[in-house]
Image (cartoon, helix red, strand yellow):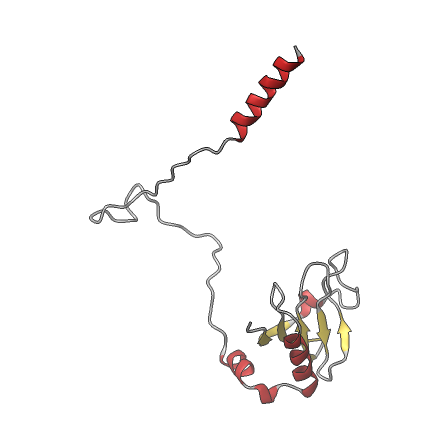
Length: 156
């Protein structure tokens, strides 16, 4: 009886694990038919995000390396000396609490993002860590940051 049961289970496993052929077809639109025909509704309203090109000042900041403070150039060199991260490291500038600050994204996961003042001193780590809420030294950063500009991102 046990042999018969074992054979039945074995046959079931083989049948359920056997590769199956799948056929995928893509519908074609005839050339004389419009895509937005009465049967294909046109998208309406909604809150779609339309990407906009970087402002002139952001493009200048990317290409004008002389505008970067020395400490920031050193941070960029240090990032480039490490392996490429996913997501890539980005440095953005913001107006925050009456001063220009530099935000460096976290390389991954629970690691901290960092906010530096214009002299390169670490002000806070607004995100990351086990809770995802950073070090708690600037809990209002997301609410009060303004005038975002891309300063640099890893080109690799």
